[in-house]
Length: 438
Figure 1 (cartoon, helix red, strand yellow):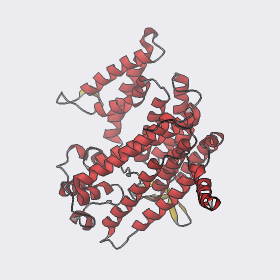
Figure 2: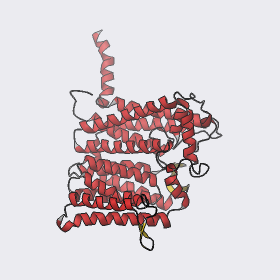
Figure 3: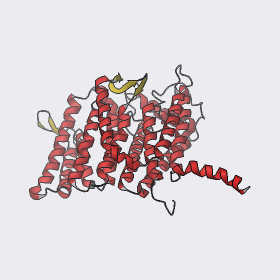
Figure 4: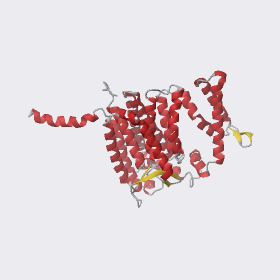
C-alpha cells in the first residue's frame, strides 16, 4: 500500500525536478499578460472584417513552450555560442536589407513560408547575449572594455537604424546602457554616451532667448545647448583619463557642440515634415488632431472615457468603433484604459512592476556575472518598452512604434519576449539554492 502511494509522488518529482528552481511567479505573470492581451486584441477587432487575435494566443502558446524548453538547459552554454549568435544576428539584419519585405516606408521583414519575420526583434536577444558574454569576465569599469562593448554593439545597431527602425534602435540603446551600468561602467561615461543626442535637442531650443544665436550662416547655437555642452565638458574632464591640459574636457565639449550642430542640420535639411510632426506632436496635444496628432488624441480620449472603472470588456465605444488607429498593436493600452478604466490600468502596470521586480531579483541572485547580465539586459528591454509605450498612449512621449511587451499584437515581438524570458528562467533555474525568499 505504501509503495503504491509513493509511486505518483516519485513520478511527479521526476518531471518537475528539471524546473525545480524556476521563478514561477516570473513565468506565470507574462503568460497571464499574454492571455489578457489576447482578450484586448479580440475586443479591438470585434467589428473588423479581418480578425487575427487568435494568432496572439497561438504564438504566446508556442513562446511559452519555447521558454519552458530553454529554462531546462544551462544558460552557460550560450557562452560557447555567443560569437555564432552575434554573427547570425548581423547576417539576418543584412539579409533584411538585401531581400527584405517593405511596409510603411521601412524594410524590416523577411518572408519565410508565408510568414513575415522581423529579425530586428530577435536581434534584441542577440545583443543581450553578446554583451553579457563580453562583460562577464572583464567588466566595463575600464575605458577599453567600455569601448570594446560599444564597438561590437554598434554594427547591429547601425543595421537596424538604417532599415529604418528608430524604435528598435532605441530599445538597443536602452539594453546597452542598462547592461553597461550593471557591469560597473562609470556613470559619467554613460551620460557622455547619450549627451550628443541631448545636445542635438537642446541646440534647437532658443529659450530663454527669442531666437537662437547665429554664428555663421546656418550655424546657430541655443543657449541651453551651450550650457549643456559646457556641463558635459566638466563631466568629461572629471571622468575621462586624459585630464592633462583639459584634453578630456575639451573633447567632451567638442563632441556635444558637434552633436548639437548635426542635430540642427538634420532637423532643417534631412528630416521630413511628417517625421518632425511625429516627434513633436506630443508637446502640443491640442494641435493638428486630424493629422499627425490623431493617434494620440484618440488614444487619450479613449483612456479618459474609461474614467475609474471603465465601460467593461467588449463595451468600450471608441474601441469597438475603431476610433483609435493601430489599437491592437502599439495602442493596446488605450483599450485597457477605456474598457477597464483607471483601476484596470493600475493593475496592468502593477503586474509589469512585479515582472520587473522578479527580473531584478534573478539578476541579484544569479550565481555568476553572465547570468546576472542576461537578466539585466532583459529587464532593460522590458522597462524601456513599457515606459515608452504607455507614455505614447497617454501623450507623454512621441509615437515611436514600440509595442507593449506580451500585450501588443506582433508575432516576432512575442516570440522574442518569451525567448528572453526562457533565458532568464534558465538563470533562475541553475542558480545556487537560496536559503531565503523575498
